[in-house]
Amino acid sequence: MVVDDHPMWRDAVERDLQGAGLDVVAVAADGDQALARFPAARPQVVVLDLQIPGPNGVEVTRQVLQQDPSARVLILSASGEQNDVLEAVKAGATGYLVKSASREELLDAVRRVARGDSVFTAGLAGLVLGEFRRLSDPAGGPAITGNPELTERETEVLKMVAKGMSYKQIAERLVLSHRTVQNHVQNTLRKLQMHNRVELTRYAIEQGLDAD
Image 1 (tube, one colour):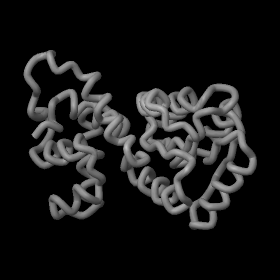
Image 2 (cartoon, rainbow, N blue to C red):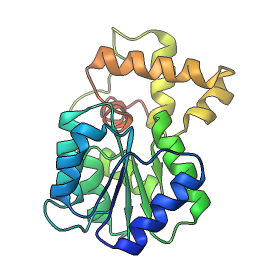
Image 3 (spheres, one colour):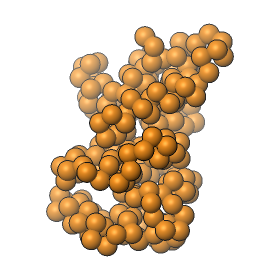
Image 4 (cartoon, one colour):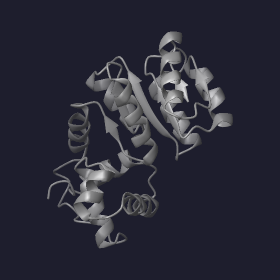
């Protein structure tokens, strides 16, 4: 689903996605349209501009994920401002690209977000991880080195997620298939009652798992 209030930009993104063999199930020009069309369309990925009329992109992200926690939101915005990025991520977006990204970068980001990876324009990933570290109080007592409910392998994968590694990088490092890594992450999400990789990253950093 493509949400943008600029018709030419919206049409271009829709055309690029369809040209790459992806199925665009809905388009919307503002927040109200997006929220009205989302329940029937049930897109796997929402490509969403932040600065749209009606409820803005952050609010749309929040409401969309309340309706369907398995959906993925990829922000495609003209703004690379720190505040905009962090607000979107806190609302549950799993990707953030600035509009200067190439067609190839957009298509790669949509595919990776659909697989469950988090994708950020170069330079933004470090910003997001840094903010999660700031939010988790380092003076709040000793770090917990793993969750008793998690297996050793799940904890190992979680540590790598906390460091911002992609599923592909984790699979290569642990000599596992991409699918096996995904399964470990899905099991971890279920055990910790979380919805997406962004929440998982925040949790892992709060537990100090990114420090090793």
